[in-house]
Length: 368
Picture 1 (cartoon, rainbow, N blue to C red):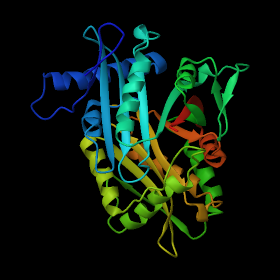
Picture 2: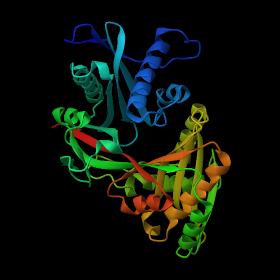
Picture 3: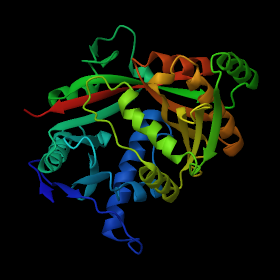
Picture 4: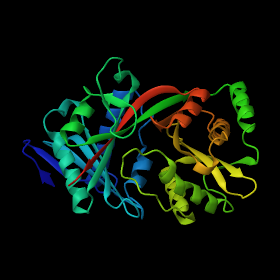
């Protein structure tokens, strides 16, 4: 437990509840962090569409062989007022830590956020990490025309200089490397629009076919799927963010799938296969939470660099939207995120009907 100059402030590591821990302090700390994040989402977005479920949190914070995940709770005179998180990659990016800090609105501007960040950075540094990365998403209405912006250092786009998140990051020594755009697609999508876009895309995609699955990748495709997922960290724009290529194999795919299943998350995958070689050239993933039936979250989407220019991203997304309509009929929207410089994927999303929802600063701090 860390004590701070803020009188009555304590910051404590959050342990993950085990079966039988219901009603204990261990369970209460996790629930307190959840309540802080839920309150943040409700205040900023008016809903919990971007929030995790309890079942997801119970699984996520246990970590995996590929990531160590730490969470801390700040209390002021016993009242939960903030939380921070540290995610430590264990196979690649061994110099990097991903950091998140949140302080409840009534307790901001008291130095609690700075103390939480210091605890997170100390935890990361003690594990040999020298590059700290974090992000903060804001609703699109926060980016008003005419507002002075801080441009991304190595990507494109910018964030308003007058935002509290921008001021906090800059004051803490972080640099804005990249800006992502989030969008929302209302469901259902007009079938005639999908048919027209698919017909146009297929004119450019001779020799490719769509394959799709729900939950677990078919054994006959898992090696090809792992090879494609390996390309995500190599081919997706990351601006100046520290990012090494992730080494995916069939075993790592199965670990991810098993984690989703334990979390109560249903993964819908549509991929595009090259008929001649059997290689997977593109894929897209939508995740669905029965506890949040109104929203789907767009996970990774990729067209491998050698296969670009054939409208494969469009084919994969159309196939998955149709699959989602059958598998998740209560879903009313999809939320997606794209780097501002990823013009091709942004154009696909606009064609499908995605509307701007928010923007996200991707921040980085390198120790000397």
